[in-house]
Image 1 (cartoon, rainbow, N blue to C red):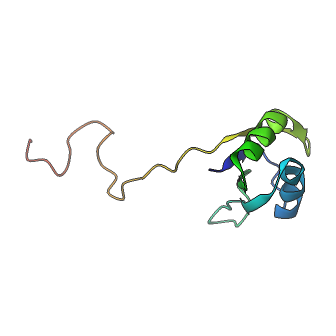
Image 2: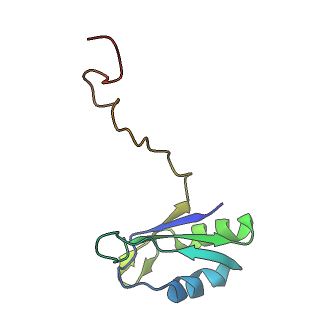
Length: 101
């Protein structure tokens, strides 16, 4: 499992995040997604810790805490949703692959 960390400063580094979360246990991995076009951080990160109890302690302590001038949003990360590459459906109107015209 991993932790979602939102409302991060765009200046945050992996080392800074690691030092904050290391207070609650062993950090396995940190991912700071970046914008494809600009290469800048997107303002959130994912942190994986060695044990779930460590993740729970970090979430309890850091959710809502102020850090680098921002109130952090820290919770369990949800599984990534699969997005269809075809688009279609869900927008109303006709389904372009249907025979019902």
